[in-house]
Image (cartoon, rainbow, N blue to C red; front, top):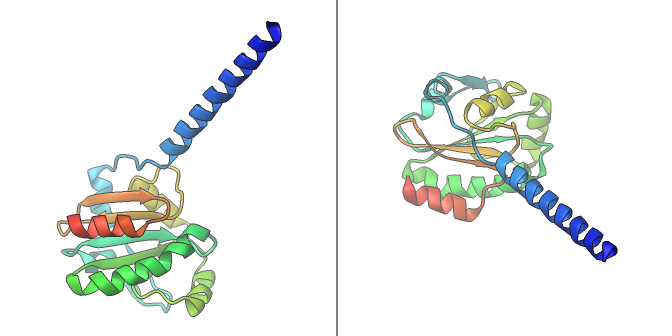
Length: 175
């Protein structure tokens, strides 16, 4: 009887720990609220592009904008880039804008883009990109992180983690 109780208690503790872990894991990937002033400040930001050009967020205002925070060392980030390129090809003519913000070393980004070109603007956000993504609701600063803005400049969608074709299709339909 004592042995059965110990196994039952051990199982209960394991289930509770697994449930707490799943809850915590899911909670870490839920975007946090964004203060209105952070949303407005985002439109004032500019970056240097891979070739030294200016990449201004404000240049995309008035159109649906998908902003993707990524890094060359992040496997899910690299995996979703071809999908984002395809989205740009199919939805760019419909008014959509995409902007990749590299939370990485500029030299690593330049080298990466030689191998896998991105068909939309890239801003070198560097480590400041982590703070910027946090201000937009990415509480833990994880990558990839994607934010969709409407034509009015307000945040409509956010996703922590790799985007899917279904995400993109849903966002394109609703925006």
